[in-house]
Length: 283
Length: 318
Image (cartoon, rainbow over all chains, first blue to last red):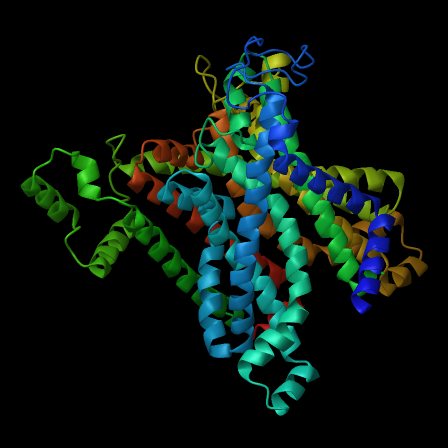
């Protein structure tokens, strides 16, 4: 019953904020497109269609967004490309979120271990995140799995710091003192008392990071470290368009780039809305 | 020397040590054997052993680390597998080129980001503020490689206003004007995200400061708009804004990697990219070390600047 009211309130806030509704709608559409890609795509994304000429302009009959330099339908490739984009945006962030919440809570709870964990994070902060991702992906070798693994490592210091800062603040509150006076074990205090209180701000941050991750992973694909051809992937498509762009045809690059941008903006709008929702001063 | 400075320097020192350890280990994490990679599959065991001995690969890891550190400190970054030259000879000039691009991008981000954010913050909730805010949401999520390509298509290929790539016109005699022309597009592409983020944050800071009681208090003295804006609002907004700008340096260094690749700008990023494609690991290692070290240094300077403009921090650091 209680949850029901909370969800209704949640829904009311969502309708009130147009930007957030648009953001959620875009993300939902992308997820649905990814799931039903074989039903939605008019052509096979990896094969040149018989009727097509190469580099057909947008709005050519049968190819609304045109074709690429190998005669593949751009719309179909965009539809299939939503799969790698939505997966690589969400899964690495969720995994590093889980790791960071453990690291951050433990670091905030115990000063001894905390000092050690946060010093390691300080060292990782010394690398610009894109550069670190590029280097890890270069060492591991190309491929979707390795790129996602690189993103997991890159995001950990940032997310751990968010959890750590929150935990240190929560530790000074009375309920923690009370819990330990009642004889709760360290584990119970960390994961039954602290966890629910530090989780919301991590979720907000993670949502924003998903947008950044879409862009970074597309960038890794663009420089050849991510998903490998012929898989339909937005970053890879933009990269393929580079050569024809120089000859004056921008469309092969234009559409996948727009798709990346729109999905990233959707995540960032959702993140902003969640932040305002959880911030008591903004109500 | 003040205590906070010493404290900050000590923490920088262990971050530096940590960075060198990670960069050093990087090359040892790569699957495969370095000597084998260099000599190829048909090398005899004797020649492999000889090369390992020559490169110090038969020593314990910790000894190898100290040998490497000694070389790095003396400016010897090793030998490139693919280009067969001394890496420091190649990377030092490349690093200067990256500096040109990143400093130009940082200046542009600060100028436009702080300017727009300041303006938006003063005019909060007006139509122009809402338009700028909406634009900055898009700017902050912009894929650098894509906007770089789009700018290239529009300004260099369609309109032929600016050069497509490189740092100087190959047939020209170089010169500052030529450099500026080549710098415009990569700089815009690199700084767009930071402009958006800096303007968003500056807007929030300024609109908070405007509502503070002391601003009302100053206003009641009949200070002119200009005096109020420049002297009190800008100055009180400065500390958080400097912090935000410092954080953006990392994004600009990362974004410059993509701009360098798209526009063929001869910097460290392009060197790392070509090295990745030719599996030239010592070159990747040296390039990463260069960028990480400069990033650590920048963060140090930003922290010190922060303490200088914000005396409150100085006291808490004691």
